[in-house]
Length: 358
Image (tube, rainbow, N blue to C red):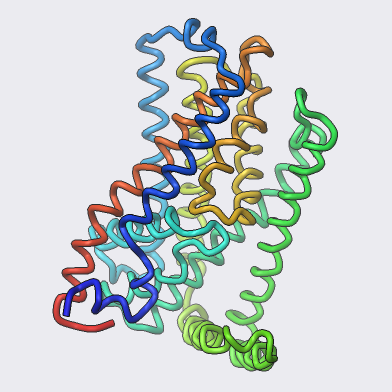
């Protein structure tokens, strides 16, 4: 039996390397349409390369390393040091690859437990690691979104100079829907992890016994079991554990949102660095409700629309400049994981399932 078939009995069987082409095609199609609609050659004519350009581009890459290092440190902390640095790197790359080729509302979390478990971590601890990873990520957004709204102001956070009114209200609606979905998830997960895991599992199973929800009963049963197992692991954690986990989460997500700042500074100027950082966080919340793999297409479009007024160029050139930055931004923050995953995933499958079934 082939390695792919051996892994195919579970969620990993749904992951195909060839699927990586779909987000690429979607992204290219949207960027091509934006360039066709609003191409302005003056944007490229005014670009001047210098050592400062190289420095800012290097800083953008450095921020991406900060993002990955934060994730790697966190998963090592969550594993209690059981995962080596190499194993942690491998799990993160596989996780990011899966997230990049699956819809944003699903992401790579559904198979992350397998990635961690197959690196030699017990099932209970693997469940705890995956659950806590999702929990910490959502806590970052739950805390930072209202904080940024307070510091920046709702009007500045959602106002788009060139598209006031309907578009601004639409963006706010997307953001609020995404935020309250995250808030609901955190509340339910907190109850399960810290208060009453068995009670939550029982409640979920009762709900999904309903006829129109019964098709997901087995999947929910597994989730409930994961919550129970995770709760036992989490309750043993001390304050140093939480400090390290929260600090690495903050490092990872904050580094991600500084990449675009550096990319814009490489070629243009930014009128408000902190506002650009805040809008990127809002964009990520919006991407939760997008059905395309890794938010492809939507990410490029919303970045060029939502952040263009912060690029200091003449108004007629703002959309073209923002489109250019959107392409570079995705080249740095998204496509490398497609390449890394396409290399690591087949080798990992061969290594982990060469002689054993999932």
